[in-house]
Length: 112
Length: 115
Image 1 (cartoon, helix red, strand yellow):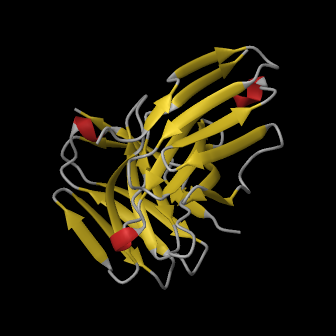
Image 2 (spheres, rainbow over the protein chains, first blue to last red):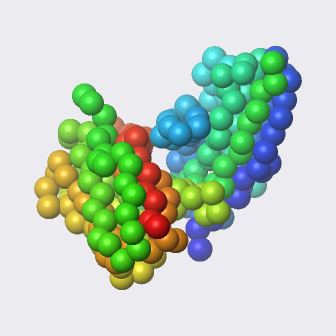
């Protein structure tokens, strides 16, 4: 069945360093890949997304890369700040269903 | 727009009681999703609707769970009877299919505790 694997489950970095979170998906028909950030006690919120016709997308300090052949996509956060500390979820879906399959989440801690 | 609205925000009930969670999607959105979040199982999709019609309920854990969407602006998720293992945060999300937009907007969630 459809599955999204996410690694690592926890990540601790020093403020100013970069953080990378990786996901792999099983459904080769997936063509939409969003990333959500969830702060403690809050709702998940979209921070960036990418479609299968694009290999990379950037928005200020965050970027996402996609390798369709390997069925692999990654979130990159540069110049991390304490407010980046949160749980990050990757997800995948296909146009025909609009159903998001979420990864298990990565707890990012940015140490001041 | 106020965003996705959920009520109640917190619910504490006793095992065996009926629980009803409510959701108002963003006006104009044609997809509505119900998720459950726990530490052990992460974010699980329970059911989703398109234009008020249930499309996929394969994530509904068992017959104790039911969901309805009587109109475009309201949906309910009901648990009857509730059990302690149903304790979780339940999120409702909505999206609009037009213009290639699959972005799902989440509500604040309902934190359910079944004693």
